[in-house]
Image (tube, one colour):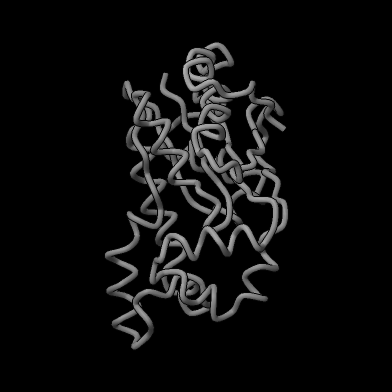
Length: 213
């Protein structure tokens, strides 16, 4: 059975980069909510006379947010049972706080947590200044609202937890602030596939051993 791995965290934490780095070395498909929703969100926001690049306002959340997660999960769940693992990328703030959410999602395809190996990678940065630096570096028009409402956005950057009924060993908190992104990627790969799987990579790159919080 393939693995279903969620990469969760705020915008700018580096969720997609981590997921893609590991997927480039493993048989895994990446389902990024921002990418899957983008055509629909652009059309819906434009139709309502709103900023098509807005991904943070209350108007966006009311019109598009839930649709984005439904599209993403439908695509991800459709791949359960195939050979490649499934990496799902997005904030999932409301969903992660709901203990029954993952159970309901798996029930859509007649599966349970006993039948699907679900893991969660909580990606974070140490402070708001680092988030701002990363957001500025990626130069995305989708981040304009964040900068215009920085106090509101930065207030949402605190630590998060996952309420799903998963073993503690299936949830990892990953600090993605190291200048070499491969350091965090090796930690995540070790978490998903086992410590031995990333040992050769760490030795090859002359990187220190990784400790997952």
